[in-house]
Length: 413
RNA sequence: GGGAAGGUUCCCGAGUGGCCAAAGGGGGCAGACUGUAAAUCUGUUGUCUCUGACUUCGAUGGUUCGAAUCCAUCUCUUCCCA
Image (cartoon, helix red, strand yellow):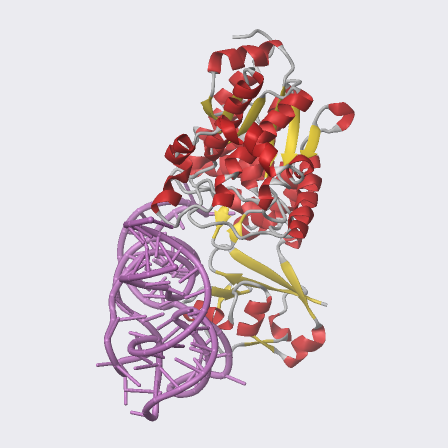
């Protein structure tokens, strides 16, 4: 072990990021001795990054701290094709405009996490070189190096070969991603590609391609996918993914997601998603029973702080404490406004629940009330016909609650 | 291009003329128990103007008093052959 600062490689390993590596020893040595350029690709398939992407950004930040140079590759070109890896169905084809718009959003969001000043990091879009490729030339230069037999045996196509079939366009995805690596190697001397563990096949494709075409060694490394102790993907809820865009997932919801992870996952999340020193991660992770809630609070606060800033994290924490612990600032609880006039006339409770977003439909609101899951100002309300009026206003607001964890503050304006 | 089997509610999957808003399981939600955890048990899970009405079973058109179920055309998927 090193004296002062440990090698990034060791940091990544200790925190549990590393899943697979092409050549461990030489890579480790290189990361110790020289400043290297590496890349991670992000396909703009949606209009916001999600927590899976965030994990990649955390790795980039660790690497950047160790003075290595990250290249953020936006997959404006590869998204035109669509990565079939691990998918049972073909992805929906996105239009060029949609992809370009998503790519813009990605670029903005990523800039918040990675320092691009003074050439410390580079952002590129593979649309710049993929879109104008000449088909025949591409086949002759790149395609010739890929064995269809080998590709077919790859784990990542397995589900597709057994199930719904794989279209030719998707089959080409691997070649395009491999070509990206080659391109970045040539342009920026980038010789490491990183990514989620599901990217292993695609990464190997690039590593092999560089070896065959350039006769040079390149490296690949994959990270743990964020999964729960039960093996499910993390960062998904019934409502959909946990997005980094506050307009799609509010900081409060974001905070709550992490506050509610299961005991078994706390330590892993702290290690992967925060920059807290490992000693602290370990001591927090070792807490037992009810004590571990402290670790969850730290996790929720830290991750929210990284993604949304300290202010938002404090607000979310305050709201959570107000709702669950009794002390804290109710001001930051999710809320809707309602006019005083409307209140004078009276609003049906069921309608109000839907408006507050506590329930997607009135039928569900009705069920929730019938099952005793609705509270008005902390009082259980079981009357389906209940009309909310001025009498229900307490200190200028009405607290609506559905179940144990969904709250909405109704403001009278 | 030829042949076969299929497309059912969030997912898997039963249902072959009325008893079907559609079995069963998974998942979700709510209740109990808890620590804003897990496990367990119970209820619930299309919408609404809610003891009734309306919309849904790939799409369109038809047969019928009545269709998820029968017929025709289209479309998509999977498998076998070329």
